[in-house]
Length: 101
Image (cartoon, rainbow, N blue to C red; front, side, top):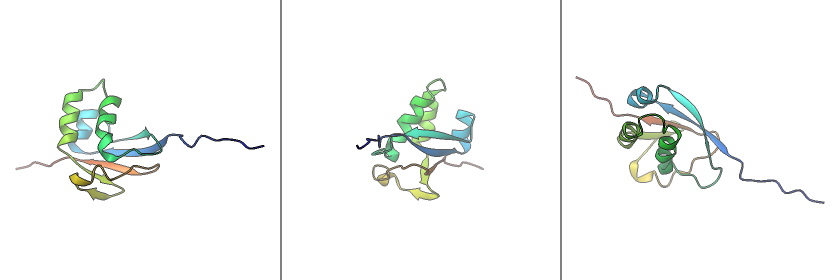
């Protein structure tokens, strides 16, 4: 007799927020549930906007759209956002532009 187990259990990633992203959301990090297969970095912006829909979504989208991303402490180029598949246990950081004077 064989048992069938679902392999579609959710995966969890840690998202770190810095500067404007942290200020906009009022948090510096959170644990996010993502699909265990076929979830890519470019999809994370929409997931975060949806997750924080009670926040100011337009402001958050502007912050995320102007930010760079790192995955497991490795910077990701914009052209690679569609290539980086997120997996359980990964750490993603939102790196906002810094201005100063």
